[in-house]
Length: 110
Image (cartoon, rainbow, N blue to C red; front, side, top):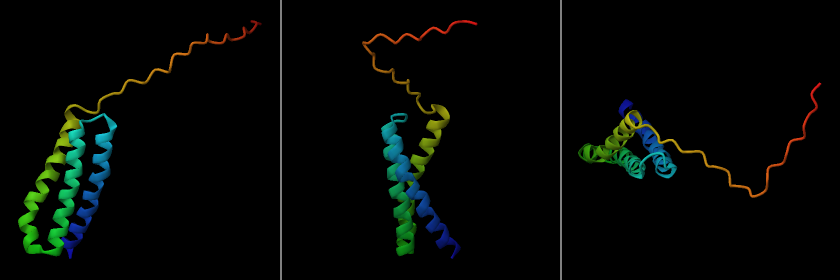
């Protein structure tokens, strides 16, 4: 039962890689390939869980092939964060307004 419970918890960890990979790919702060790898890692986790629960004999044979992309994706993401970090975006400048700025009324000094 413990092993089956561990496999079920692996499902949620694998599912977490799907939105993480999507956000990494869409953010522009990381390489898109890293996001794609994380989504493939999600598929690897889910494949591992489903094959081990449905057919344990086949699952043991499939597991190394299913988990390699997941391990590569997770380790690549960790190394990227440690070495490069996220890129810093420059704040977007507001659109140039053609009108002159309004003058502030002067406040008399006491």
